[in-house]
Length: 193
Image 1 (cartoon, helix red, strand yellow):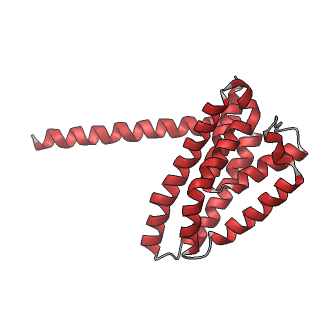
Image 2: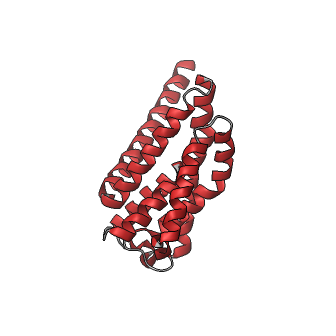
């Protein structure tokens, strides 16, 4: 199994959870113009000029829809279905993962990763930003998400080992936070006794 391909797949799927069309466009353009991403059938359809053009149009539409108050909430509802699907396509299509991992498993992993990132973004981060700033920070946060999605997509395609390091750091951080919380709860329980 191509471990770097798996890291790339995770990074691209996570990026799709922030913005469905940016990572698809990055993969399409890199597949069309570079040797960094080699798409096998049926995923090579992403390199078709019509598909690239459609991805550009959809990227522009989402960019502006996500910056307009009230429209951004409708956009997030619509994207609840699109982002996980994009994550599934990206996971399955990126870096020969399909040849080494069952395509169904690849697509399920992509749905889970992109869907998880989208769920955190739309159910936790965005409502908190809206509530704490009265919606004033939604546009800058949306721009930051687009920038992060672009950087993550490029990094996943060009330097997948960095994505592996990031995944490892997130796992270590999660374990540390859980350990810290359990320790604090135990300490509190001991003080109460």
